[in-house]
Length: 219
Image (cartoon, rainbow, N blue to C red; front, side, top):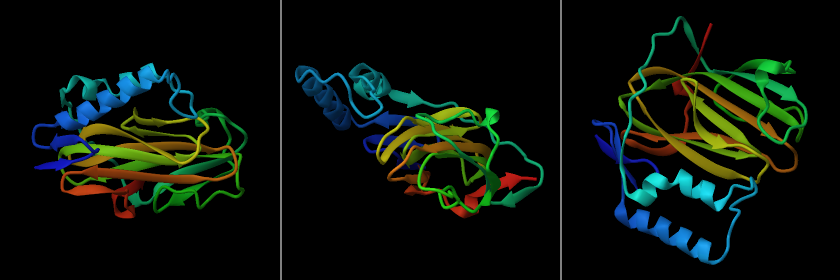
């Protein structure tokens, strides 16, 4: 029932807990000590502060055992393979509010990706559907994108990788019961190079792109 998700974090899927490897926690603490001595105040192109990064890693810094309350699955209506998407053209410096926009195109794709874009930049994509979780456990979701992205499970933000930046991966952890859960990923591309991949890891499998056989939409 046990496996790893993010590096340095041990998952116990039976009890929905994550335990920080003490050696990994010490490496993280050492990094922040060196950064503070060097006078580092900003960490990336998003202009995240050193203090914000420390807040993100506070469980690691404190060496905690983290207990997760599992999200219950739900029984949807009729489901079909693939995830629904909206494609919108425009200029943004963060993920837009898709509810206020009129999509240029809509449809269904087998997986989350940018192969529906009609131009090299200045567009946004929203993917929304269901993910079929194979068994109870603690899952790690990863959003790799250029530019920004945000990933949600059951309406709760799990990964914040927003803002203009080069290809960057951020991750978040959530405990899920076996069955269907709602998944949403929003993305924008400001221009130049582009990338978008959604990964996950969980009980019995390491980090891998979320496969088509696990993605569905209602209708």
